[in-house]
Length: 282
Image 1: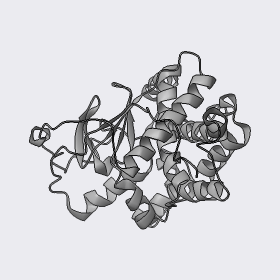
Image 2 (image 1 turned 180 degrees about the vertical axis):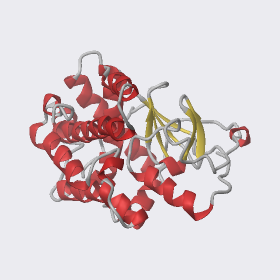
Image 3 (image 1 turned 90 degrees about the vertical axis):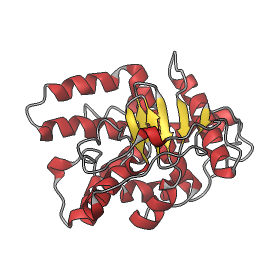
Image 4 (image 1 turned 180 degrees about the horizontal axis):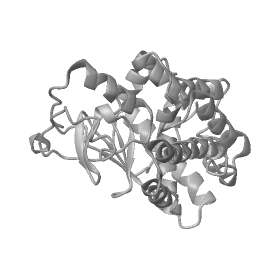
């Protein structure tokens, strides 16, 4: 993926110089649960509290340190990709306002509670902020077999920005209301799957327009779509369940199967139209 030379200014706050506290207790079982949450994209701290109840984190251990825009290559990548995603959504959505993106290590305070690296990349609607611990890129590639290509990593970021779009449009609030009225957990999970698949589709919409809003400075290159599909496959609920338990339980899906995630990412890329991302009707 081409990105160097793209516009900066993605509202990135770099907290990687801060101490985020340590995770203690829980053993291998908790680590397996954490890894499932780590790679599905879109989980926020309040949603993983029950899964991580065996884990102890002290937010008071954070050391205050200066924060600012990132200067390293990985941080610049997040900055430029975020700015490009913002430019796409400004053109696609009236009244779009950019989220903040926070880079952190291990853990950090968020508007949704204390965020941990084990939760993976997540979006907090309360403070309209995307939180990223960049170590997840290596984990995603080495532990789950996802792609390490730049576009695969950008897809993750664009997915989280997709949740921000859902907050701005009111979709997320409607889903929470629907889940509260669900007859059982399996039905509530179906709404979660639709929300996550729509964020995948929105990531594809960004990819479809990345080049045109940047004058070609940010653009997909040959093989990028295949690398994105490889990642969408690796983080499907069925693939994650197979890795953690050896069996697949569709009623427990919260983000969609590998095939579904690939389908909706591809639909966003091929149509470039947010209106084609109606996962709820489908």
